[in-house]
Length: 278
Image 1 (cartoon, rainbow, N blue to C red):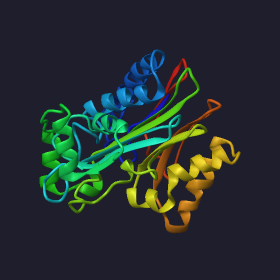
Image 2: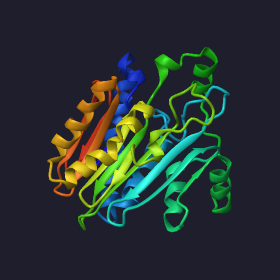
Image 3: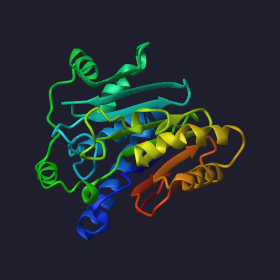
């Protein structure tokens, strides 16, 4: 299992927050890896991303950024590499765990919902009202420090004991964006899994969608490239338009990879031993 805690981070300048994030990632990947031993990859990534959403150090679920109109709108997606089913919710409001709403959609024919309709679906299926705003995010919004306080997406990729891959990604947005702006996290550009590779992205959503990063990496692994080569080749292509992105991934062979266009992504992995880096 490999997880990430975002691309842009206060931890760049605050050692205490950096340490706290590293400790949180280590704890969460340990819990997620333990869960993975007794469930499918898809179930494990939903469980693990829910833990990340519940940790207000990260920008997903509780602690999500406010958009320019002062509202929090979150996005999340789940893809099961075995079934190739993808489900996502875009700009949902007032729920605690967006990834769990996306997971609920996996059994429906219509599996990507947005805005008020996503919220109505959540209420109809037992997800109660929850305000994910924390005081820090409100203060940041009021001071209009969006360029310096952005904290990125969270994600998880897992390979289960049956050899199946799954990827889940969740975000609270980039902060101060135009209301209705769509993140890459609930698209196959930012979250993708096949029987060959699972990928979760973070960074500038528009750049990630321009590069179709997650699905492109998975396609290249399917065509025979090693995971690291496929990731590096795809990230290098962002240089053509100065794109910013970070990725985590696992291949069907158990290869794990993490990389970014700038050294700002915090991540952790577990294959029996825990590693945490930024």
